[in-house]
View 1: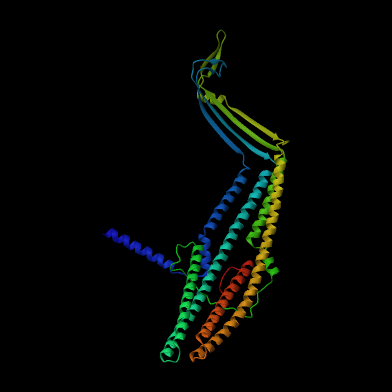
View 2: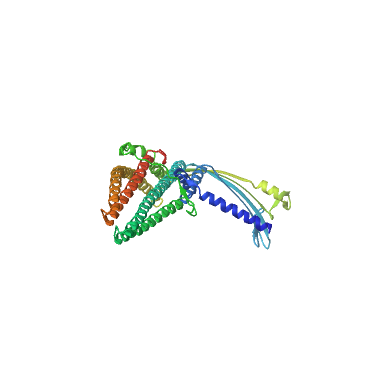
Length: 458
């Protein structure tokens, strides 16, 4: 019973902890930080960067000499060579040992090793920029989804306010119908409008729920239940102007954006790849050394010479044989490539094509960056104009609706005209909210290209 109680309390504690964490109200900065820390694509790119670091280490370690050793124990049956007399023995089992150690050092190979190190270093730096680029893209996606939640919240509020006005009008109309001042058809038309607005409110709430789901999935959260964001106070000055022009923003972005830096580094890497290929035409000079010794159990040691019978043989111990059979060797090898199936020339040709492709990639990245800035700038200008116009329209529509509502209350306009005025007001409010958040996002994108971190703070 005590054990069950302990587990129950632990379960309650964990559940409450999860609930508290889900009830946390998130700011945009917290969402971006959490997404970057938990995004799977970023984690994969981090692993890829570690691979590139290992590749750079391997390229450096290739400058070191190689050293290898071997040891063997062999059995030979039947006919065998006596290592002492160099005569063959029959019907005898021979045991022998061989020991070898050797190494080599590449002295010169057309600077291929050096160029490989430099190339791999540029690839590592490009990989780090790719990682930063993914982080930036995730941050922009989070900002877009965050602003989408704020927009949907405003749309839900505006729709709910319209529904509340309709419900209040239904109560007023009921009284007028009961008093015989209005026909029952007016009440039915307003109730029909109320049903449509309730459906519209449900649709808006569903869109809000989907925007919560999109953001929580981007943050790799298990569920959007209990997730909430901070709603900052956002005001837009109708006299605001977009600072800078396209050329100024581009000049800042082209020297700081990680996608451009990555393309530049990849181009440098391809230049050194061409040098590596050209190094294949160069002679190769290498140094090698070796050490070997051995032992055989049929080998005998010459102890002396008998004038009559000849050599006198005795036991040849393992230690003595290993000591006496030592062999050292040093050598230099020069390889001169003459004709190798045209492999070097084709490798050089492919490297040139790769470098040309990297140049086009860099050019394409810069052009795409310019187009993105150009589009974001145009969208921001258009959104600001739309916001100013929408704000005027909302002010006008609010005044017009109040006037229509007053006339409807005294029976001077029909419910059709009243509902049409409400619909126009809601559309104007929706257009205002959409243009506001479109302007905010596009200006934040432009700030992002300038190197300003994403934030909704003033």
